[in-house]
Length: 338
Image (cartoon, rainbow, N blue to C red; front, side):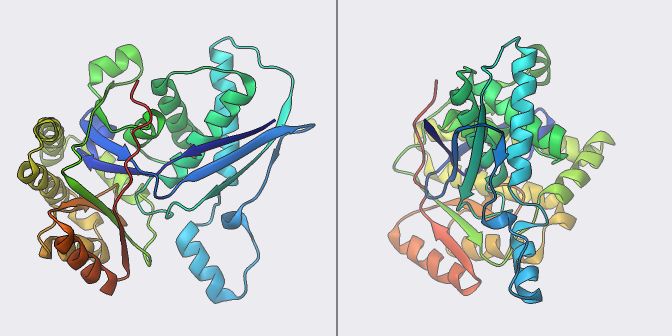
């Protein structure tokens, strides 16, 4: 039996980066791109390499370009971390796994290291495949926690939880990471919500910019732990923006949605200005010059926003193209929601 599993890129619509600091966020996944995992039974455990794992290059320029796109580490480490954390989860749950092994491979066309949660998509797809292979049932909240643990505990990747929640639910989700609730239950309050079809969203990303989120998260974490007043106030405001967004979406209030998206980035710029590169800021400014709203989908490299009509979208496409920025209308996934 061959098991095929898929997970999609995530766009944080509002509230980020407060998800790592007991805040609130709304995020969705979209199927314009995907991470796919294939798993089948074999005598031994084997992890097969994909394009980003190759160690041969045409020349130094090719090496430089690919390391800039994919970093020094490929996807095999993600599969290994997934497998180890899956086993730990089963042990802690007292589950006895059938004595059988597998070969696992992945492929992904999610733009890499651009704030679209491409790494967690691979891990999400891998854990789903292993769970199906061994007949293990877990809730969406448990899956999200397990994916985060694979990245944070096994690979030391600083990250918040929202990426994995949206990918686990396969539906737009309102997330409340209330500290007391998290400490009691081990996960936040998650509510599947609807995004009104009359509100037009776009996602855009640079083709010449691949940056990890580690620097921004590390600096923000240091300031948060140091109880810097401006950072603490920002966390509270991001959470409040998320509540306002939930209500605006329910009411189909385009102008409020646009205002909240812009404020989310402006607030980040106020407290994280030293961590925003000129090319990242340029994407925001170019998008807003057309009348569209714009904020980061994650920590940079890609943006999400709203546009009014097709004329604005085409103007947005033309202007972003000049700077090597691709744009898509996200096909928002609404498969889950339980």
